[in-house]
Length: 64
Image (cartoon, rainbow, N blue to C red; front, side, top):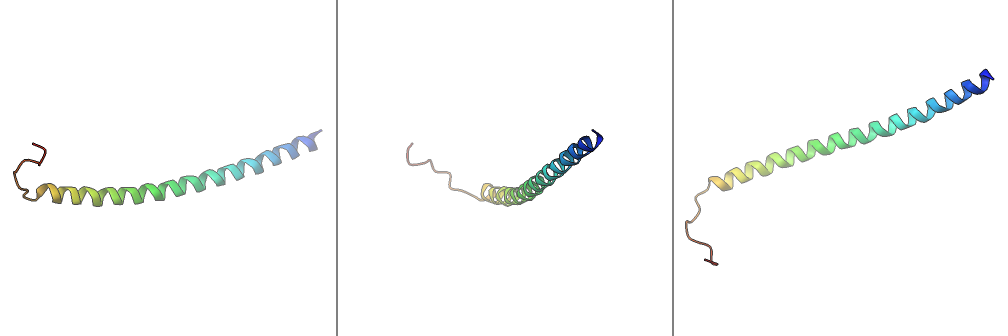
């Protein structure tokens, strides 16, 4: 009886370790993607600040 119980526990442990490894991989990939997106957002924010700081003509758009 104890042998079957131990075998079942070992099997469950192996499955849990596999799940943990898979989840760790997903978290690592998402962390890298988040960092890339942060860098892109920073670049876009700087460009937007540059554009907003430029002198633009004060004329009305053509549809007015």
